[in-house]
Image (cartoon, rainbow over all chains, first blue to last red; front, side, top):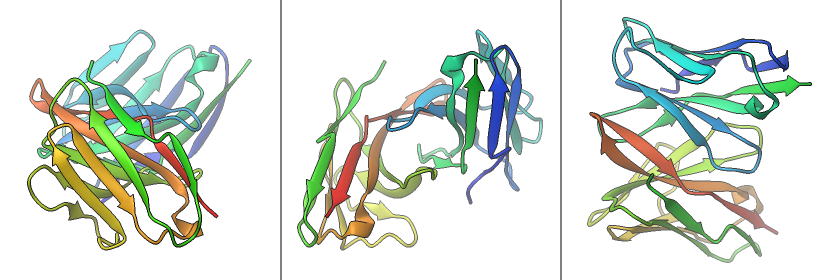
Length: 109
Length: 117
């Protein structure tokens, strides 16, 4: 089953924050976050494996709740380069990855 | 980091012809690769799992006789779209996983844009 993302779309001004959620009805083995620019392949952001885990790099971070059924991606002080479509992916112990429907983020000057 | 290449980057073909897309892992071996298809403004939909040395595993609703997958070696998987039709026009992306820190990290190829006229 495809994980469910919300919101579907976000429009921000530079410097504003955003949160993108990814949820599943069952516990996830792992959750992967990617950003995709138009016409390009997805770019890896991060993986979360453990319930309660949080990790981040610079102004982009993510969390995985204790039950491993929800993950959130946090974009702080957004930059124009953050624009794109963000996908969460449900990972498995075989390497298979099922993506959510995506969240389109547009950052305006 | 690991690099995955795809060839060609784009292809235009006539309806009824077949098209082959290659996916290569350049600096690592991949016994498994994955093929995705993405229509405009939609998510990446997993089509099939390519397995080196055995048959591919197709997701529900994907026609295995139309989308032929061959995992010829530990670094090469090919997807052949047979008897292509305009509705097969899409962005096809492959990925290869590597095991790191207890989980699989996926490395994606740059994608192949197929247009069927």
